Amino acid sequence: MNYNDQIEQAAALIKESSGFYCLTGAGLSTESGIPDFRTPGTGIWEKVDPIKTASVEVLQSNPRLFYEAAFNRFASITLAEPNPGHYALARMEEMGYLKGVVTQNIDGLHVKAGSRKVWEVHGHLRSGYCQGCKKRYSFEELVQQVELKRIPPVCRNCFNVLRPDVVLFGDPMPPLFYDAEDTLRRHCDLMLVAGSSLVVYPVAYLPGLARKLIIINLQHTGYDGSAELVIREKCGKALHDIAEKLSPRKETS
Ligand code: NAD
Image (cartoon, rainbow, N blue to C red; front, side, top):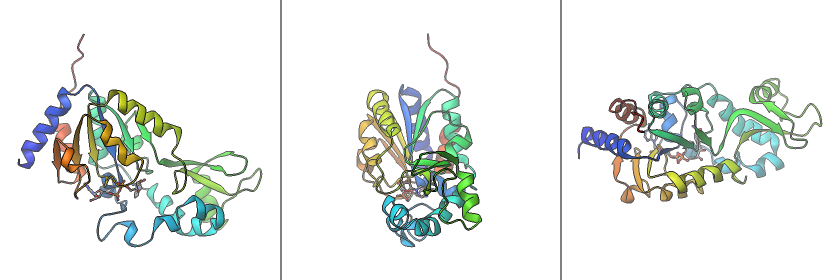
């Protein structure tokens, strides 16, 4: 099937679905200038093993290393802007098709693009908190302390080390992950997976909860064989082209 036929078929599947959800990964945000983990040549994993810097173990045993090695990457992510893929998903929700987005991304770009129902299951970079007294801070406060060379940044109340609201390697999944999982289990008849290698668990179990799958990814994923449609194109273009085939859904009484 050629690309245009795939786009037509994706739009047709979306129109006939009553429980359409999207699962996104780092590949959706590479077109916003944020490197993913596993693209050959540019993926972060080829340069530094995130487990050796962005993990709870490192944050607790060597907070200075965490802030010097992992935090700068987080801080640069906050400067990124949404790309056509993020905007296309926000439009699909606005038009009455997409019920929600489950994202592994911590970049907050779905929220910035205007998506309303978003489960950021690996957290986000809008805030942080004290590991001791749990007092909440804006992410900006962490950045400011690091810029002033207060590394690691500490709580104004109890002087314990602050951390961002992201799920690090070694953290348990947050309750909202289980909320997303429950919603998908009960309502998802069609899932579009955009820009994920689908190797990070437990998120990689989620496509198994959908009755039908559409995958948009530049590389092979373990779910390709069970998908209705696999589109080998950049997320920005493919999602934009699919959204162009949709018009606002009419209310049925
Ligand atoms: P991944 O790096 O494992 O996989 C990304 C996939 O997207 C790859 O298969 C790649 O071929 C594909 N891809 C890259 N650019 C693409 C594009 N423009 N269009 C279509 N496909 C494209 O990412 P993952 O599956 O999300 O797992 C990595 C983990 O890393 C996640 O847990 C996530 O939290 C974290 N992470 C997040 C960000 C972010 O917030 N933007 C960035 C890097 C890593």
